[in-house]
Amino acid sequence: MVRNATKFYYPIRQAITSILPLVDEFVVALGDCDPDDHTLEEIESIGSDKIRIIHTVWDLEKYPRGMEHAHQTDIAREACTGDWLFYVQSDEVVHEDDLPRIRQRCEELLDEPSVEGLLFKYRHFWGDYDHHITSHAWYANEIRIIRNDKDIHSWESAQSFRRIPGFDGLHYRQKEGTYKLKVARVDAHIYHYGWVRPPQYMQKKRRAFEVIHQGRDRAEQYFREEEDTFDFGNLSQLTIFRDTHPAVMQEKIRAFNWADQLERNRPRPAKHKHERLKYRVLTFIEQHFFGGRQLFSFKNYHLTRT
Image (cartoon, rainbow, N blue to C red; front, side, top):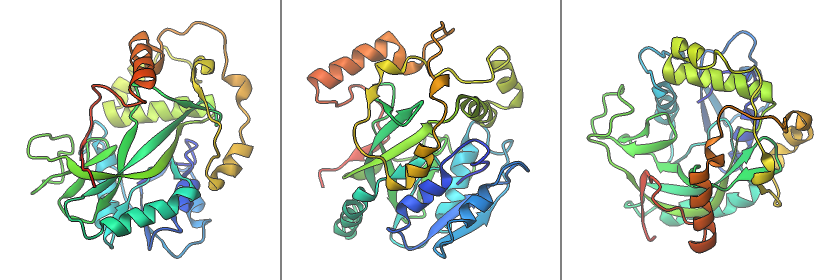
C-alpha cells in the first residue's frame, strides 16, 4: 500500500523491484495521491506485467490512528492469489542475495500448516546509507510473509499481522479476539530506509504521518514550534554499515547529497528514542551479554522451532 511515495522520498520502485524476481504477481493498493506526486508514473516505469495496481481512496475519519495503513494493506492482501504473501512496505527493500533463501524457506514450509508466517531480521538505516541503528528502541524482527488466509489481517498501523476470525473490517487496533501468528524464522533481512531522506523530506513525511495517526489539528499543534528540516542528531553513536546494500538501491545511493545537513552541532529540545540513556544501557547489555537478543521487548508473534 502506498500514497505520495515520490512526494515524501519513499523508495517505492526499489521496494517493488527487489522482490519481483521472487513473486508471481505484485499487487499495489495505490491511494489518492496529491497532484504534485508521481507515484503512479514511478510504478509504471518498472514496466512489469506482474504488477497490478488497485486505485483506492483513503478515509482517515473512518480509519483513524493509523488504521488506514492497515486497511489499505488488507485491500492489497485480499486481491492476492497464491499460497504465500510477501508484504513489503514502501520504504523496505530486500537484498537479492536473500531471495534464494526466502524461496527455499517458503517451499520447505508450504506443507507445514502450523506455520502461519515468516519472521525477517531488520536493518534500520538512519540519516544516510552508512549508518544503521542497533538499539533496544527499535524492533529487530517482523513478519513479512504470511499465508494466504482470509482470517489473517494487517494489524494496528500495518507494522504486522494477526489472526482475527470474524473481523469487522474496521477496528484494526482491537486486541480482544485477535491471535498472534505462529511464525518461523527466515535467514534474510529487510533493509528499512524509512529514515533515510533529505532532512526537509523527513520533516514533511513526519508531518503527514502525524496527520494520519493523530488528525490534522493535533498534528499542526505538535509541529507548531518545530523547524522545517529534521535533525537526525549525532550519527557517530550509530553502527557503521560495512556490508552491501541491495543492488536496486544503487541509484538512490548515488543521489545522496545531504551529508552537510546531517551534523548541526547544536542542542536539540529532545533526544531521539535510541539516544536516551535507558535504551543505550539496555542495548549495551543485550549486545555484550545476550548475543544481541532483545530483553523484555514486545513480540507480536509466537516463534516456532521449525
